[in-house]
Amino acid sequence: MAQRKPTPQNQPTAKASSPGARAVRLEDLAGMDSARDWGEALQLDISDYRAGEIRWDDVDSGCVVYGPPGTGKTTFARALATSCGVPLIATSYAAWQRSGEGHLGNLMQAIHGTFEAARQNRPCIVFIDEIDTMPSRNTKSRHADWFNSINNALLEELDGTDAREGIIVIGACNDPGNLDAALLRPGRLGRLIEIPLPSLEALPAILRFHLRDDVSAIDDLDAIAVQCVGRSGADIAQLVRDARRLARKSRSPLGHPHLLEVLAENLKDLSTAELSRIAVHEAGHAVTGLRLKVSEQINICLSDRPQTCLDLRIAGAGVTAQRVQNVLATLLAGRAAEEIILGAASAGAGGRANSDLAKATEVAFNAVMAQGLGPEQSLVWYGMYDSQPQIALFRPVAEEVEQLLDQAYVQAKSIITSDQDLIRLTARALLRRRAIPHNDLLMMAGMVPTTFDSKNA
Ligand code: ADP
Image (cartoon, rainbow, N blue to C red; front, side):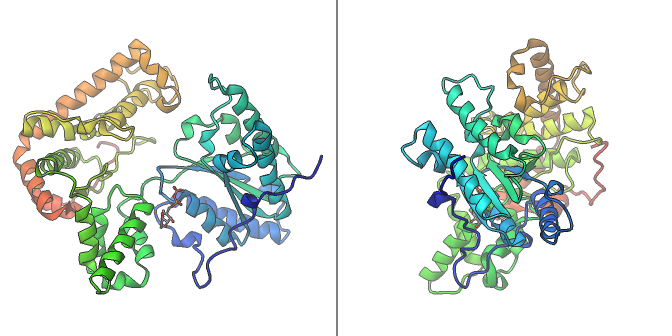
């Protein structure tokens, strides 16, 4: 086979950090525990492989990291390469497409060029961003032949056992639902690892990372963190950059008020009526979640973007039909609060794929289709909703899903009706303070901290 020359975009980059700046390492990254655990195990494997203690077959060959934009997928790959002391070859479908004149032949050559560069630099990490741009080979699109050829070229590189020695491949995407399952087979990319929006616990560490030495000037980092719920690592980086700019403008050192000012600035496009509605909506979620004990921690913040204030996970052995109903009621409680307290619901609960209605629908579909927890207790497994969305057209399933959602909405409305005073109080406090941490919420509700019971919750 003719040797293909590596193109400039295939040159390793991990060692090229700017002078003076310490390259980011795995231990610097918060909010991506699963990815970090996998990366730390890989770091050990690579060092044992280099020491001749294990064979390459015993090293994990790669993974696909997925999650919303800005959650640090690229940063993770860079940090992993630095921690492992190996070069990183970063590319993407778009970079392959830009090479040459954009013909299929150029693109396939670019794919092979990336791996040729990797072979010359092994051990190394190849990072392929936007790997979901190449849809599954089962896709019935007009461009199916084009994508089949590209996928096959990539699979050919991933499968070359000897030629793959010393090459870890990490793919990144926002939505793994589009990926060709063949890519995830063991020995190829192997496994899917989620990098979600950071949890409340991870936010102070991410703020600290970006604030660097200025962190000592921030009076209460946790209070800032609560206001950042729902924001990605990239949003936090932007927040700190904006606050630094404000501080420079006022010729003062960066401090707590600058961060608060930028956070308040983010709300300036919302009218008073919109802010009040969001406050009632969020208070509805929080109070319902509190009454149904769905989450160990419930933190509310008034924000211009979707919230992630509660832990509403529905997976694992502790999940019962009761837990599903409670989670659904909590998800629908924002809309229920708008309806009961403000007289009518707005479109705010719906819309995007991460909206309350979208999440509740997905939870309900999975309960019916894949978890044996629907109202009819059917044990038929149809597959998870994200891989079988067309099942929504199958009437018996759709009817059960609607039944689950209706029951949960009735439950949410009943909690909101009996807790109207607390919801109004919480909404007012939220408008004033912008954020309410868990313990303050408990105090307002006149509740003492209780043990969270995930089984009966
Ligand atoms: P993605 O690849 O998921 O879109 P990136 O890795 O490009 O996100 O992240 C963009 C920026 O956001 C990074 O330069 C980094 O400053 C910041 N960032 C993202 N996640 C984190 C994190 N967990 N900790 C610190 N910074 C982060």
